[in-house]
Image 1 (cartoon, rainbow, N blue to C red):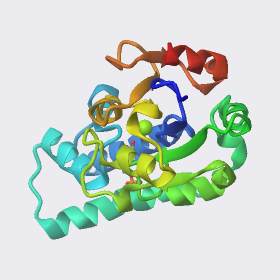
Image 2: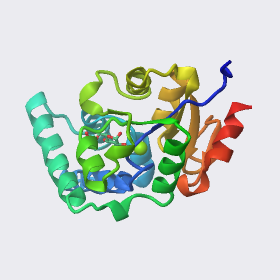
Image 3: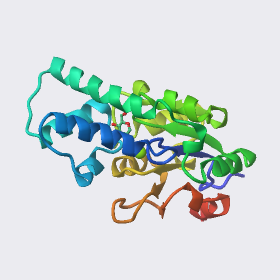
Image 4: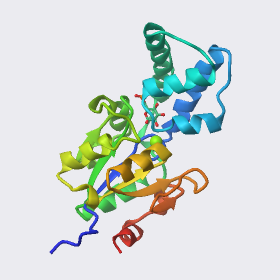
Length: 221
Ligand code: G6P
Ligand code: MG
């Protein structure tokens, strides 16, 4: 008989959880803001984490009090994405955040399914570059969803593709929008980062080097 709290799958956000690309997104948005004549603080950037490309651009333009039509917005988003892709183009497996491989190995050994649920359209490129594809049972990226976090679509699609009920999934997230998305989808959450930034996650860890199966299983109780 299966325990109703049993963890059958882990769904990982990518940027800021598996790789340190959250910083590269910030660098590229800040560069765009500077080109447009204003600055982007880390606090303002925090709210953009986990949010899709065009929605993030809208937030940035609002901060700078800048109006742009659809065509101009597309140009600005492409400019930012070009810089971002430059920053990540040399990314190697050794740039996986500490503890990632050990934990993915441990989950695989225990037959716990693994997915990536990311708002980024660059997710498949990054997964390829850091060579973690072999661990994944599902990869849902920004091109596969119509509603961004905090809507739960990205995580629900990952669960569906793995054939696991949301109640049996745990989501790892570094963004508040992502924690909210997982909770909205009826999933348990582990916040990756600090308690000051992330609210209402079931557990907070500083990074994946601070989690193992035993600790994960405490969420089953
Ligand atoms: C992730 C990041 C966001 C980023 C979004 C879209 O959710 O946390 O900072 O804006 O993906 O990424 P993309 O690579 O498609 O521009
Ligand atoms: Mg993230």
